[in-house]
Image (cartoon, rainbow over all chains, first blue to last red; front, side, top):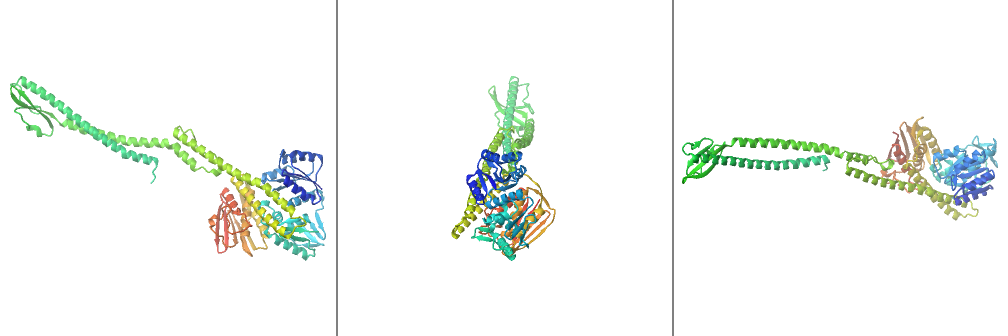
Length: 224
Length: 408
């Protein structure tokens, strides 16, 4: 999978590219409008992570250019401007998703993967991990054919962990992900553990192995 | 005690004008008397001269007495027979003729002079009284007209609110130099204050905005670090503390930014919002999210209640209220949400808040030491409520917190 990250803050850019490279993404990073334009013209990407405020131009302009040129690259806007207008405008211009800064890397990663999944799934909207089967359309999980009765929060939690499999996901990232409103209004991470506990219990009841690990006090990791 | 300018002005006129006029009257009266005395004297003197001259020329035919006119008597008399008559004024003079002394008394009527004095005095009193009233009336009406720009300036100042971002409506062309100056000075003052206020707000917004980038960088680096394969438990503990502090800082910064943006009226777009649906959805989420801590959530939400406001702000309002009800609760407690047209009531079990409930909505005020809240949540609620003129009432009674919001 080929990824382009356009972000003017070099330190943030390296964090993002490093995070994705750890998952075997081919990840390129640029910090300016002109560099970004060059890359976009040179080759197609599976997903472009696009900051709006760039030296030399606006990310929205890039997006407009991309869509006018009928390029199909998936685009996720990352912006510090948390206003509804920006979001609506971004999506109007043809962005596939919009994420407000500051975000959690696992969240960005989940968005990118969801986008790529939508792009290439072609009707096959399910994830299989070992004996675990997740039907994305029906929003259900089964283990060896047995349905696991999950609440909405537990399902979202499981899917988030599965999407970020083999990575440590912090409790804060989980709390923000579970909340379906604006991320900065999400409840605190203090009760994430109780949902994890319930989820683990339910998976265990259906005979699944212990796939969810607790990483000290930091977060959780789904290991396969 | 304060009086209005007009009262003060009238009072001082009423105090001083009669005094001045009284003094004027006394002076006038004395002058008049002086003049009358002088005139009497002149007239009597003329008569003396005329009659004496006539008598001296012809002592035989000219009579010695003409009642009411004169009386010539030999010798030097000091007293006159007719002098006691109140209506007569007289003059006694001693003249010499052929070695003999004669006392000549001349008379004029004093009645006319007395009448003149009374009439002139009365006329003067009437004129003074009319003048007094005229002066007061003219003074009042002109001062009322004169001070009109002042009162309109006062009204403008009273109606001015720095938070509303509206221009200060005073006119610097009132036609009166002092008021023009006053208004110009005021406008300059308000412009300066306004500018300072705007800069202050802009600064807060910019600062919060700029803080976001380093906060995001710290967060991303920590997220890379927690995946390091040789992480020890000790380091994990440190990282955990760094994360928590950074998240709190982040949250605080976001709320601060939000507060400033509301203050800067950057949420102008208002649309009808299905409040019932929003509340239903949010309370469902919170109920599920906190189901292991807060045992019971009951909701009584009347359907189809709409509210016209900014959707983002209303979501923040509802969210903060709900979150507060769950966070400031007790293990195994309950939350009750009730929505009726015009009123939202959120009740929850919980320990009493410490300190003054009136300060509950102040920024950075906390009831308990609790690192789960940034202590800006209720300040946000208040700011939003103020923006839309909602009324918030908080009460605490026997372990039950109740927050009521009335939508106008």
